[in-house]
Image 1 (cartoon, rainbow, N blue to C red):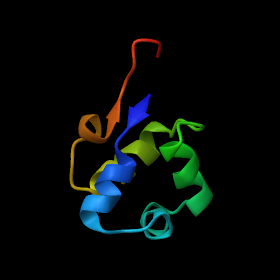
Image 2 (image 1 turned 30 degrees about the horizontal axis):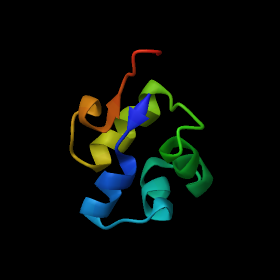
Image 3 (image 1 turned 135 degrees about the vertical axis):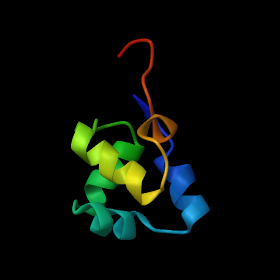
Image 4 (image 1 turned 90 degrees about the vertical axis):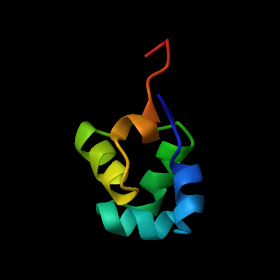
Length: 66
């Protein structure tokens, strides 16, 4: 699963730590998601998309291999 979290954070000018606090996870979790080392739960993906005020499909994208 690909994601655009890093891009969306840059647009909104927020750090990994700030995003983590908003969705109640650690900064390390946000870093792992951005690095494609961790796939978030549906609930977490929805929370992250809500922070950016975007549909989840605009932040996360399934790849052919998913």
